[in-house]
Length: 476
Image (cartoon, rainbow, N blue to C red):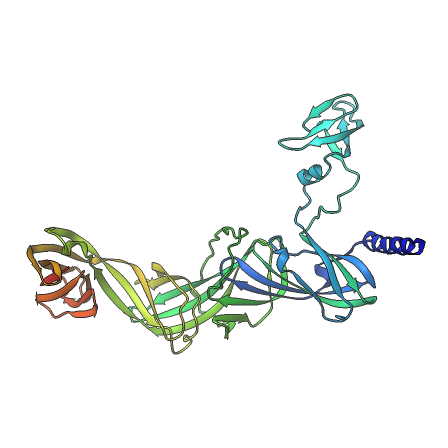
Protein backbone atom coordinates (compact mmCIF):
# COMPACT_ATOMS: atom_id res chain seq x y z
CA UNK A 1 0.00 0.00 0.00
CA UNK A 2 2.83 2.39 0.93
CA UNK A 3 4.61 1.54 -2.30
CA UNK A 4 1.46 2.29 -4.32
CA UNK A 5 0.95 5.61 -2.52
CA UNK A 6 4.55 6.56 -3.12
CA UNK A 7 4.15 5.78 -6.82
CA UNK A 8 0.97 7.88 -7.05
CA UNK A 9 2.69 10.78 -5.32
CA UNK A 10 5.63 10.51 -7.69
CA UNK A 11 3.32 10.63 -10.72
CA UNK A 12 1.46 13.63 -9.29
CA UNK A 13 4.71 15.46 -8.63
CA UNK A 14 5.95 14.68 -12.13
CA UNK A 15 2.78 16.03 -13.77
CA UNK A 16 2.78 19.05 -11.48
CA UNK A 17 6.38 19.84 -12.33
CA UNK A 18 5.66 19.49 -16.05
CA UNK A 19 2.84 22.00 -15.93
CA UNK A 20 4.70 24.29 -13.54
CA UNK A 21 7.60 24.45 -15.96
CA UNK A 22 8.13 27.85 -17.61
CA UNK A 23 6.01 28.41 -20.67
CA UNK A 24 7.91 28.49 -23.95
CA UNK A 25 6.76 31.02 -26.50
CA UNK A 26 7.05 31.10 -30.27
CA UNK A 27 6.61 34.34 -32.21
CA UNK A 28 6.60 35.51 -35.81
CA UNK A 29 10.40 35.67 -35.60
CA UNK A 30 10.41 31.86 -35.60
CA UNK A 31 8.20 31.65 -38.66
CA UNK A 32 9.66 29.73 -41.59
CA UNK A 33 6.72 30.08 -43.95
CA UNK A 34 2.99 30.75 -43.91
CA UNK A 35 0.30 29.77 -46.39
CA UNK A 36 -3.15 31.36 -46.51
CA UNK A 37 -6.07 29.93 -48.47
CA UNK A 38 -9.05 32.29 -48.47
CA UNK A 39 -12.59 31.15 -49.26
CA UNK A 40 -15.73 33.13 -49.90
CA UNK A 41 -17.90 34.20 -46.96
CA UNK A 42 -15.20 35.29 -44.50
CA UNK A 43 -13.31 32.01 -44.10
CA UNK A 44 -9.63 31.17 -44.48
CA UNK A 45 -7.25 28.27 -43.86
CA UNK A 46 -3.91 29.29 -42.33
CA UNK A 47 -0.82 27.04 -42.27
CA UNK A 48 1.87 28.57 -40.07
CA UNK A 49 5.27 26.80 -40.03
CA UNK A 50 7.82 27.73 -37.34
CA UNK A 51 11.16 26.49 -36.00
CA UNK A 52 10.68 25.87 -32.26
CA UNK A 53 13.07 24.58 -29.60
CA UNK A 54 11.28 21.82 -27.66
CA UNK A 55 12.28 20.27 -24.35
CA UNK A 56 11.81 16.54 -23.80
CA UNK A 57 8.69 15.62 -21.86
CA UNK A 58 5.49 17.48 -21.16
CA UNK A 59 5.38 21.24 -21.37
CA UNK A 60 3.44 24.26 -22.62
CA UNK A 61 3.96 26.13 -25.86
CA UNK A 62 2.47 29.60 -26.38
CA UNK A 63 1.93 30.10 -30.12
CA UNK A 64 1.71 33.86 -30.39
CA UNK A 65 0.19 35.94 -33.20
CA UNK A 66 -2.49 33.53 -34.33
CA UNK A 67 -5.59 35.06 -35.84
CA UNK A 68 -7.86 36.74 -33.30
CA UNK A 69 -10.76 35.05 -35.14
CA UNK A 70 -9.26 31.55 -35.03
CA UNK A 71 -11.69 28.67 -34.64
CA UNK A 72 -9.76 26.77 -31.95
CA UNK A 73 -11.62 23.51 -32.56
CA UNK A 74 -10.08 23.37 -36.05
CA UNK A 75 -6.46 23.87 -34.91
CA UNK A 76 -4.03 21.06 -35.78
CA UNK A 77 -0.36 21.11 -34.71
CA UNK A 78 2.07 18.72 -36.41
CA UNK A 79 5.76 18.05 -35.79
CA UNK A 80 7.39 17.85 -39.22
CA UNK A 81 10.81 16.92 -37.80
CA UNK A 82 10.25 14.39 -35.00
CA UNK A 83 6.67 13.10 -35.17
CA UNK A 84 7.37 9.96 -33.10
CA UNK A 85 6.60 10.54 -29.43
CA UNK A 86 5.10 13.96 -30.13
CA UNK A 87 1.48 14.40 -29.07
CA UNK A 88 -0.89 17.06 -27.78
CA UNK A 89 -2.54 17.04 -24.37
CA UNK A 90 -4.74 20.14 -24.45
CA UNK A 91 -4.91 23.60 -25.96
CA UNK A 92 -6.38 26.93 -24.90
CA UNK A 93 -7.03 30.01 -26.98
CA UNK A 94 -6.37 33.17 -24.96
CA UNK A 95 -8.42 35.81 -26.74
CA UNK A 96 -8.54 38.31 -23.86
CA UNK A 97 -6.04 40.91 -25.04
CA UNK A 98 -4.20 43.20 -22.66
CA UNK A 99 -5.99 46.51 -22.11
CA UNK A 100 -6.36 48.65 -18.96
CA UNK A 101 -9.98 47.51 -18.58
CA UNK A 102 -9.17 43.80 -19.06
CA UNK A 103 -6.28 44.05 -16.62
CA UNK A 104 -8.56 45.60 -14.00
CA UNK A 105 -11.20 42.89 -14.58
CA UNK A 106 -8.62 40.14 -14.02
CA UNK A 107 -7.76 41.71 -10.64
CA UNK A 108 -11.26 41.42 -9.17
CA UNK A 109 -10.80 40.12 -5.63
CA UNK A 110 -7.10 41.01 -5.63
CA UNK A 111 -5.09 43.91 -4.31
CA UNK A 112 -3.83 46.84 -6.38
CA UNK A 113 -1.88 49.94 -5.42
CA UNK A 114 -3.57 53.30 -5.88
CA UNK A 115 -1.08 56.12 -6.56
CA UNK A 116 -2.19 59.69 -6.01
CA UNK A 117 -0.12 62.78 -6.88
CA UNK A 118 -0.51 65.83 -4.66
CA UNK A 119 -1.62 68.74 -6.91
CA UNK A 120 0.64 71.25 -5.14
CA UNK A 121 3.73 69.37 -4.02
CA UNK A 122 3.72 66.71 -6.73
CA UNK A 123 4.50 64.07 -4.12
CA UNK A 124 3.09 60.58 -4.77
CA UNK A 125 1.19 58.73 -2.05
CA UNK A 126 0.44 55.00 -2.22
CA UNK A 127 -2.47 53.08 -0.74
CA UNK A 128 -3.55 49.49 -1.26
CA UNK A 129 -7.12 48.59 -2.23
CA UNK A 130 -9.06 45.48 -3.22
CA UNK A 131 -10.92 45.48 -6.55
CA UNK A 132 -14.54 44.53 -5.82
CA UNK A 133 -16.17 45.11 -9.21
CA UNK A 134 -15.55 46.69 -12.61
CA UNK A 135 -19.04 46.71 -14.19
CA UNK A 136 -19.79 50.26 -15.28
CA UNK A 137 -16.77 51.54 -13.39
CA UNK A 138 -14.33 50.42 -10.71
CA UNK A 139 -15.37 49.70 -7.10
CA UNK A 140 -12.36 49.70 -4.74
CA UNK A 141 -12.24 48.67 -1.08
CA UNK A 142 -9.68 50.54 1.03
CA UNK A 143 -8.82 49.75 4.64
CA UNK A 144 -11.40 52.21 6.00
CA UNK A 145 -13.79 52.88 3.09
CA UNK A 146 -15.13 51.91 -0.33
CA UNK A 147 -14.72 54.22 -3.32
CA UNK A 148 -16.06 54.13 -6.85
CA UNK A 149 -14.10 55.24 -9.86
CA UNK A 150 -10.33 55.28 -10.07
CA UNK A 151 -8.95 57.95 -7.73
CA UNK A 152 -5.50 58.15 -9.31
CA UNK A 153 -3.19 55.72 -11.07
CA UNK A 154 -3.31 51.98 -10.48
CA UNK A 155 -0.24 49.80 -10.09
CA UNK A 156 -0.48 46.05 -10.63
CA UNK A 157 1.93 43.40 -9.37
CA UNK A 158 1.99 41.47 -12.66
CA UNK A 159 0.06 40.60 -15.79
CA UNK A 160 -2.21 37.55 -15.34
CA UNK A 161 -1.08 34.47 -17.23
CA UNK A 162 -4.22 34.24 -19.38
CA UNK A 163 -4.09 37.90 -20.44
CA UNK A 164 -2.03 38.31 -23.59
CA UNK A 165 -0.78 41.27 -25.56
CA UNK A 166 -1.29 39.29 -28.79
CA UNK A 167 -3.81 36.53 -29.71
CA UNK A 168 -2.17 33.32 -28.45
CA UNK A 169 -2.90 29.61 -28.67
CA UNK A 170 -1.45 27.84 -25.62
CA UNK A 171 -0.74 24.16 -26.27
CA UNK A 172 0.16 21.51 -23.71
CA UNK A 173 2.24 18.86 -25.48
CA UNK A 174 4.74 16.08 -25.08
CA UNK A 175 8.04 16.06 -26.96
CA UNK A 176 10.19 12.94 -27.28
CA UNK A 177 13.53 14.76 -27.17
CA UNK A 178 15.30 18.09 -26.87
CA UNK A 179 15.47 19.46 -30.39
CA UNK A 180 14.88 22.39 -32.69
CA UNK A 181 11.78 21.09 -34.45
CA UNK A 182 9.77 22.38 -37.37
CA UNK A 183 6.13 22.64 -36.30
CA UNK A 184 3.13 23.38 -38.53
CA UNK A 185 -0.04 24.86 -37.05
CA UNK A 186 -3.07 24.85 -39.34
CA UNK A 187 -6.48 26.30 -38.49
CA UNK A 188 -9.61 27.87 -39.93
CA UNK A 189 -10.30 31.49 -39.16
CA UNK A 190 -12.61 34.38 -39.87
CA UNK A 191 -11.41 37.92 -40.45
CA UNK A 192 -9.93 37.15 -43.88
CA UNK A 193 -12.03 37.68 -46.97
CA UNK A 194 -11.66 38.36 -50.66
CA UNK A 195 -13.78 39.52 -53.53
CA UNK A 196 -13.25 39.98 -57.23
CA UNK A 197 -13.52 43.37 -58.90
CA UNK A 198 -13.41 43.94 -62.63
CA UNK A 199 -12.72 47.07 -64.64
CA UNK A 200 -13.82 47.14 -68.28
CA UNK A 201 -13.40 49.80 -70.96
CA UNK A 202 -15.72 49.80 -73.96
CA UNK A 203 -14.50 50.64 -77.44
CA UNK A 204 -15.85 53.60 -79.38
CA UNK A 205 -18.44 51.47 -81.20
CA UNK A 206 -19.33 49.36 -78.13
CA UNK A 207 -18.31 46.20 -79.98
CA UNK A 208 -15.17 45.39 -77.93
CA UNK A 209 -13.91 45.85 -74.41
CA UNK A 210 -10.69 45.62 -72.43
CA UNK A 211 -11.09 43.77 -69.15
CA UNK A 212 -8.92 43.82 -66.02
CA UNK A 213 -9.69 41.59 -63.05
CA UNK A 214 -8.53 42.32 -59.52
CA UNK A 215 -8.71 40.38 -56.28
CA UNK A 216 -9.38 42.59 -53.26
CA UNK A 217 -8.20 41.05 -49.98
CA UNK A 218 -9.33 42.34 -46.58
CA UNK A 219 -7.52 41.33 -43.39
CA UNK A 220 -9.25 42.08 -40.09
CA UNK A 221 -8.08 38.88 -38.39
CA UNK A 222 -5.90 40.63 -35.80
CA UNK A 223 -2.51 39.52 -37.12
CA UNK A 224 -0.28 39.90 -40.18
CA UNK A 225 0.84 37.22 -42.64
CA UNK A 226 4.39 37.99 -43.77
CA UNK A 227 5.57 36.71 -47.15
CA UNK A 228 2.58 34.39 -47.39
CA UNK A 229 1.78 31.88 -50.10
CA UNK A 230 -1.66 33.06 -51.13
CA UNK A 231 -4.41 30.91 -52.64
CA UNK A 232 -8.07 31.71 -53.29
CA UNK A 233 -10.91 29.20 -53.62
CA UNK A 234 -13.65 30.14 -56.09
CA UNK A 235 -16.99 28.49 -55.37
CA UNK A 236 -19.57 28.12 -52.64
CA UNK A 237 -18.23 25.76 -49.98
CA UNK A 238 -20.91 24.33 -47.70
CA UNK A 239 -20.48 25.30 -44.05
CA UNK A 240 -22.32 24.64 -40.82
CA UNK A 241 -23.93 27.86 -39.62
CA UNK A 242 -21.33 29.71 -37.57
CA UNK A 243 -22.06 32.61 -35.25
CA UNK A 244 -18.52 33.88 -35.82
CA UNK A 245 -19.37 35.09 -39.29
CA UNK A 246 -19.71 38.87 -39.18
CA UNK A 247 -19.95 41.73 -41.61
CA UNK A 248 -16.70 43.07 -42.93
CA UNK A 249 -16.11 46.74 -43.33
CA UNK A 250 -16.19 47.76 -46.95
CA UNK A 251 -13.24 49.72 -48.24
CA UNK A 252 -13.26 51.86 -51.32
CA UNK A 253 -10.22 51.25 -53.48
CA UNK A 254 -9.06 53.37 -56.41
CA UNK A 255 -9.21 51.35 -59.61
CA UNK A 256 -6.67 51.85 -62.37
CA UNK A 257 -7.55 51.58 -66.03
CA UNK A 258 -3.97 50.54 -66.89
CA UNK A 259 -3.53 47.03 -68.24
CA UNK A 260 -1.94 44.56 -65.81
CA UNK A 261 -0.32 41.20 -66.45
CA UNK A 262 -2.05 38.12 -65.03
CA UNK A 263 -0.60 37.22 -61.63
CA UNK A 264 -2.61 34.16 -60.57
CA UNK A 265 -2.57 30.58 -61.86
CA UNK A 266 -5.85 28.65 -61.93
CA UNK A 267 -6.57 24.95 -61.34
CA UNK A 268 -9.55 22.74 -60.47
CA UNK A 269 -10.07 21.68 -56.85
CA UNK A 270 -12.85 19.19 -56.16
CA UNK A 271 -15.96 21.01 -57.53
CA UNK A 272 -14.36 24.43 -57.10
CA UNK A 273 -11.49 26.37 -58.64
CA UNK A 274 -8.24 27.41 -56.98
CA UNK A 275 -6.20 30.51 -57.83
CA UNK A 276 -2.57 30.66 -56.67
CA UNK A 277 -0.52 33.84 -56.59
CA UNK A 278 2.80 33.27 -58.39
CA UNK A 279 4.79 35.11 -55.71
CA UNK A 280 4.81 35.60 -51.97
CA UNK A 281 2.87 38.54 -50.59
CA UNK A 282 2.43 40.19 -47.19
CA UNK A 283 -1.11 40.65 -45.90
CA UNK A 284 -0.79 43.27 -43.18
CA UNK A 285 -3.16 43.56 -40.26
CA UNK A 286 -6.18 45.81 -40.94
CA UNK A 287 -5.23 46.14 -44.60
CA UNK A 288 -7.01 46.00 -47.92
CA UNK A 289 -4.78 44.73 -50.71
CA UNK A 290 -5.36 44.31 -54.45
CA UNK A 291 -3.74 41.64 -56.60
CA UNK A 292 -4.05 41.37 -60.39
CA UNK A 293 -6.21 38.42 -61.47
CA UNK A 294 -6.50 38.68 -65.26
CA UNK A 295 -6.11 41.00 -68.21
CA UNK A 296 -7.82 40.67 -71.58
CA UNK A 297 -7.99 43.12 -74.47
CA UNK A 298 -10.30 43.54 -77.46
CA UNK A 299 -12.91 41.09 -76.19
CA UNK A 300 -15.81 40.92 -78.74
CA UNK A 301 -18.91 42.45 -77.17
CA UNK A 302 -22.54 42.91 -78.15
CA UNK A 303 -24.84 45.66 -76.90
CA UNK A 304 -28.55 45.08 -76.47
CA UNK A 305 -31.55 47.31 -75.85
CA UNK A 306 -34.17 45.34 -73.93
CA UNK A 307 -37.77 46.17 -73.05
CA UNK A 308 -39.23 43.53 -70.75
CA UNK A 309 -42.99 43.42 -70.21
CA UNK A 310 -45.17 41.93 -67.48
CA UNK A 311 -47.95 39.34 -67.38
CA UNK A 312 -50.57 41.19 -65.33
CA UNK A 313 -52.15 43.08 -68.26
CA UNK A 314 -53.05 39.87 -70.10
CA UNK A 315 -55.67 39.00 -67.46
CA UNK A 316 -57.80 42.15 -67.40
CA UNK A 317 -58.60 45.43 -69.12
CA UNK A 318 -55.95 48.11 -68.52
CA UNK A 319 -55.93 50.64 -71.37
CA UNK A 320 -52.80 52.77 -71.06
CA UNK A 321 -49.91 50.76 -69.59
CA UNK A 322 -47.13 53.34 -69.63
CA UNK A 323 -45.56 56.34 -71.35
CA UNK A 324 -41.82 56.88 -71.93
CA UNK A 325 -41.06 53.48 -70.52
CA UNK A 326 -37.34 53.05 -69.99
CA UNK A 327 -35.41 50.58 -72.14
CA UNK A 328 -32.58 48.70 -70.46
CA UNK A 329 -29.04 48.64 -71.90
CA UNK A 330 -26.99 45.45 -71.64
CA UNK A 331 -23.57 44.37 -72.87
CA UNK A 332 -22.61 40.73 -73.30
CA UNK A 333 -19.43 38.80 -74.04
CA UNK A 334 -18.27 35.18 -74.04
CA UNK A 335 -15.85 33.95 -71.40
CA UNK A 336 -13.62 32.20 -73.90
CA UNK A 337 -10.66 32.80 -76.19
CA UNK A 338 -7.65 35.06 -75.80
CA UNK A 339 -6.86 35.78 -72.16
CA UNK A 340 -10.31 34.70 -71.04
CA UNK A 341 -11.66 31.14 -70.95
CA UNK A 342 -10.95 30.82 -67.20
CA UNK A 343 -13.41 30.58 -64.29
CA UNK A 344 -14.42 34.11 -63.31
CA UNK A 345 -15.06 34.61 -59.58
CA UNK A 346 -18.24 36.44 -58.69
CA UNK A 347 -17.86 40.16 -58.21
CA UNK A 348 -18.70 43.59 -59.58
CA UNK A 349 -17.83 44.67 -63.12
CA UNK A 350 -17.43 48.43 -63.51
CA UNK A 351 -17.55 49.69 -67.09
CA UNK A 352 -15.97 52.85 -68.50
CA UNK A 353 -15.90 54.50 -71.91
CA UNK A 354 -13.76 57.32 -73.24
CA UNK A 355 -15.40 60.60 -74.15
CA UNK A 356 -14.41 62.73 -77.15
CA UNK A 357 -11.53 64.21 -75.16
CA UNK A 358 -10.15 60.75 -74.43
CA UNK A 359 -11.11 60.73 -70.74
CA UNK A 360 -12.57 57.50 -69.35
CA UNK A 361 -16.05 58.03 -67.95
CA UNK A 362 -18.05 55.61 -65.78
CA UNK A 363 -21.07 54.22 -67.67
CA UNK A 364 -22.41 51.54 -65.32
CA UNK A 365 -21.74 48.47 -63.24
CA UNK A 366 -23.29 45.09 -62.56
CA UNK A 367 -22.68 42.05 -60.39
CA UNK A 368 -21.74 38.70 -61.92
CA UNK A 369 -21.97 35.30 -60.27
CA UNK A 370 -19.26 32.63 -60.50
CA UNK A 371 -18.95 32.10 -64.25
CA UNK A 372 -17.38 28.96 -65.76
CA UNK A 373 -15.34 29.16 -68.94
CA UNK A 374 -17.22 29.27 -72.25
CA UNK A 375 -20.27 30.84 -70.58
CA UNK A 376 -21.71 34.26 -71.41
CA UNK A 377 -21.23 37.27 -69.17
CA UNK A 378 -24.18 39.65 -69.28
CA UNK A 379 -24.11 43.08 -67.68
CA UNK A 380 -26.89 45.61 -67.24
CA UNK A 381 -25.31 49.06 -67.42
CA UNK A 382 -28.46 51.16 -67.01
CA UNK A 383 -31.40 52.53 -68.99
CA UNK A 384 -31.17 54.24 -72.36
CA UNK A 385 -31.82 57.98 -72.34
CA UNK A 386 -32.72 58.33 -76.04
CA UNK A 387 -34.70 55.11 -76.52
CA UNK A 388 -38.14 54.89 -74.89
CA UNK A 389 -41.48 53.14 -75.38
CA UNK A 390 -45.19 53.87 -75.06
CA UNK A 391 -47.41 50.85 -74.40
CA UNK A 392 -51.16 50.47 -74.29
CA UNK A 393 -53.84 47.80 -74.46
CA UNK A 394 -56.06 48.53 -77.45
CA UNK A 395 -58.72 45.89 -76.77
CA UNK A 396 -59.66 43.25 -74.22
CA UNK A 397 -62.43 40.71 -74.55
CA UNK A 398 -63.53 37.75 -72.47
CA UNK A 399 -64.50 35.00 -74.87
CA UNK A 400 -65.85 32.52 -72.32
CA UNK A 401 -64.78 28.96 -71.61
CA UNK A 402 -64.41 25.76 -73.56
CA UNK A 403 -63.30 22.23 -72.83
CA UNK A 404 -60.70 22.11 -70.08
CA UNK A 405 -60.24 25.90 -70.04
CA UNK A 406 -62.24 27.94 -67.51
CA UNK A 407 -61.47 31.33 -69.04
CA UNK A 408 -60.40 32.62 -72.47
CA UNK A 409 -59.29 36.20 -73.11
CA UNK A 410 -58.43 38.03 -76.34
CA UNK A 411 -56.16 41.05 -75.76
CA UNK A 412 -54.58 43.44 -78.27
CA UNK A 413 -51.62 45.73 -77.62
CA UNK A 414 -49.67 48.53 -79.26
CA UNK A 415 -46.05 49.34 -78.44
CA UNK A 416 -44.48 52.49 -79.92
CA UNK A 417 -40.66 52.48 -79.77
CA UNK A 418 -38.99 55.89 -80.09
CA UNK A 419 -35.37 56.58 -80.96
CA UNK A 420 -33.85 60.05 -80.51
CA UNK A 421 -30.35 58.90 -81.50
CA UNK A 422 -28.68 59.79 -84.81
CA UNK A 423 -28.35 56.11 -85.66
CA UNK A 424 -30.83 53.25 -85.88
CA UNK A 425 -31.14 50.81 -82.99
CA UNK A 426 -32.64 47.35 -82.53
CA UNK A 427 -34.77 46.82 -79.45
CA UNK A 428 -35.54 43.37 -78.09
CA UNK A 429 -39.09 43.10 -76.74
CA UNK A 430 -39.80 40.30 -74.28
CA UNK A 431 -43.42 39.71 -73.31
CA UNK A 432 -44.18 37.13 -70.59
CA UNK A 433 -47.60 35.81 -71.61
CA UNK A 434 -49.33 33.63 -69.02
CA UNK A 435 -51.45 30.52 -69.51
CA UNK A 436 -51.89 28.64 -72.78
CA UNK A 437 -51.53 31.37 -75.39
CA UNK A 438 -51.80 31.79 -79.14
CA UNK A 439 -50.67 34.75 -81.23
CA UNK A 440 -53.68 35.74 -83.37
CA UNK A 441 -51.98 38.53 -85.31
CA UNK A 442 -48.83 40.69 -85.19
CA UNK A 443 -47.32 43.45 -87.32
CA UNK A 444 -43.91 41.77 -87.03
CA UNK A 445 -42.94 38.12 -86.64
CA UNK A 446 -42.17 36.86 -83.13
CA UNK A 447 -40.20 34.00 -81.60
CA UNK A 448 -41.41 31.76 -78.81
CA UNK A 449 -38.25 31.65 -76.67
CA UNK A 450 -39.98 29.82 -73.82
CA UNK A 451 -43.44 28.46 -73.07
CA UNK A 452 -44.47 31.81 -71.59
CA UNK A 453 -42.32 34.25 -73.58
CA UNK A 454 -42.83 35.96 -76.92
CA UNK A 455 -39.85 37.90 -78.33
CA UNK A 456 -39.59 40.51 -81.09
CA UNK A 457 -36.44 42.20 -82.41
CA UNK A 458 -37.63 45.57 -83.67
CA UNK A 459 -35.46 48.03 -85.63
CA UNK A 460 -36.13 51.69 -84.85
CA UNK A 461 -34.79 54.25 -87.37
CA UNK A 462 -32.60 57.19 -86.36
CA UNK A 463 -34.70 60.03 -84.92
CA UNK A 464 -37.80 57.99 -85.63
CA UNK A 465 -40.21 55.47 -84.22
CA UNK A 466 -41.61 52.02 -84.94
CA UNK A 467 -44.99 50.63 -83.87
CA UNK A 468 -45.59 47.01 -82.99
CA UNK A 469 -49.19 45.84 -82.80
CA UNK A 470 -50.26 42.33 -81.85
CA UNK A 471 -53.25 40.37 -80.60
CA UNK A 472 -53.06 37.28 -78.42
CA UNK A 473 -55.55 34.71 -77.08
CA UNK A 474 -54.87 33.49 -73.55
CA UNK A 475 -56.54 30.40 -72.08
CA UNK A 476 -56.64 29.50 -68.38
